[in-house]
Amino acid sequence: MRILIVSDAWYPQVNGVVRTLSTLARVLKAEGHKIVMVTPDLVCTVPLPGIPDIKLALYPDAKIARAIERLRPQAIHIATEGPLGWGARRVCLKRGLPFSTAYHTKFPEYLATRFGIPERLTYSLVRRFHKPSRAVMVPTPSVLAELERHGFSNLCIWSRGVDTDLFRPLPRDGLNEPRPIYLNVGRVAPEKNLAAFLDLDLPGTKVVVGEGPQLEELRRRYPRVRFPGPLFGLDLARAYSAADVFVFPSRTDTFGLVLLEALACGVPVAAYPVPGPLDVLDAAPVGSLDIDLGRAIRRALDIPRERCRDHVAQFTWAHAARQFLANLCPVEGMRGKRLPRKQRRAGGGRAAAGAP
Picture (cartoon, rainbow, N blue to C red):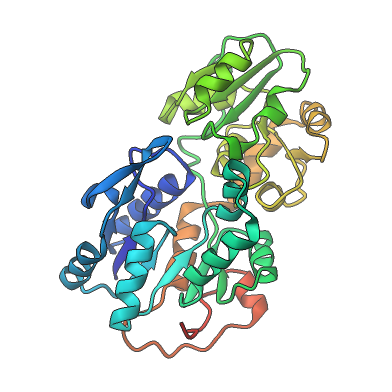
């Protein structure tokens, strides 16, 4: 199948969206599909004020239209709600081309946290973006239920996976710090709610792996916390394996790939009982969820590490890729019926076409 994927999030950004899309493209190509990515590096961009590693596309419609003409895609997927995403939406609607979209990021909560913009305003805009999508892919049943409450339609499940060959239990010498070691991995930014973790009075060492706009500020505020910056590949797997607990203080992530990576390395999770952790852990005894994050961390220290690795066996990228393909909307001959709600929640396929 020839698939065009449009995304405002791409390298050199380091985040879950980029990792999800790059891994998906690699898996699909290995299965014989032709994947063409339209990303900010292919168009004129300007840096997002205050976050220069995020590039905003300028006037992308012509570039997207040419990509469609060259590829003649059998399916079009718009991954993000940024300038490229809106451009692809305009081109598809103008040409009468069906497309799918994805809800990766809780922009209403993100913008409310960073800039104080009321969530109701942003939800209205995001809902408008996704309304003509034939299949709005969301990572978990919890997020699907949340979006249904906000008036979204044509929702379907597209889960995530983890590379268990890379992320596996390794010798626990990757972080030479006093124990217990409490690890967080991810973008160092306000929406990740890191202060809720770093303000806790805990014995041992807190380690935050990653980069982002809040990194230097948090280094100054928390001199006893170790901030090694971003790690990749085997270095990241060694850092996970060295930790005693993986701490995930975010309340606004839609999934949290880092949760799977930590569990694959045998590290129990401590988090708030919110979408993402609720879905990944799914009541399994591999982590602790509590409105009191400190209490969750203390309980997670007693969880046997071997349970964690076993839990992630269900999260494979091959399965995630199959879900993605099932949710896509053929550009020609679209006559599918809307799936029953139960089947959509299970990720059995896409929802039916809805009017723009």
